[in-house]
Image (tube, rainbow, N blue to C red; front, side, top):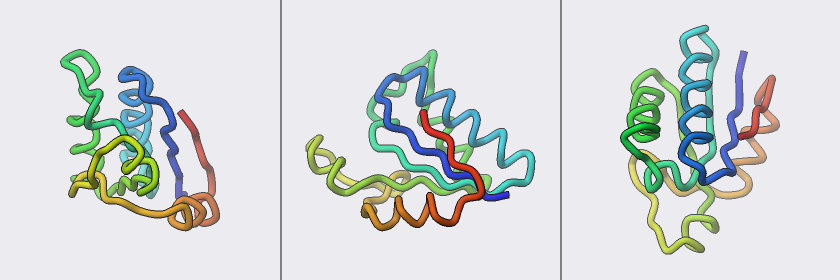
Length: 102
């Protein structure tokens, strides 16, 4: 199954749980694509979102970030979170069998 995970929260615990869920899905042999902007910036020792994102990427998942959202926060895209477009988010939703939002 193809699962889309959309993270619209900048709460560390919420993002951490979204990434943990995405990693669980990969463990179930699902394909996972996610959208998130601030997960790198809000990572904490307790809710290490960067660690979860790294695990997701190493397991074959993909993370995308809205270019407009990145720019509005005065951030830049990165290898872990490349800039994408609204069209890319549309494709995630269109191509996914299930979409989960956090």
